[in-house]
Image (cartoon, rainbow, N blue to C red; front, side, top):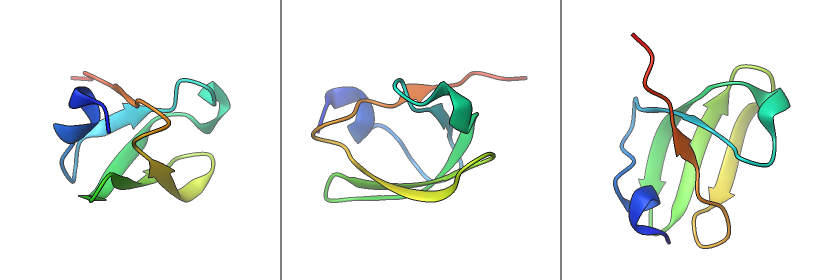
Length: 60
């Protein structure tokens, strides 16, 4: 898992770098490198943090 993914906590907003069409997602959990994110346009997805580095979103 990347160092950035290790910092992700429930409630944080993220984007998937390879799937911009999914929109912004909210982290649901981050356990053992498996990050569950609920994306606006895709629904709930489990991400392998060792393969994908999610991009944090800083929205007001």
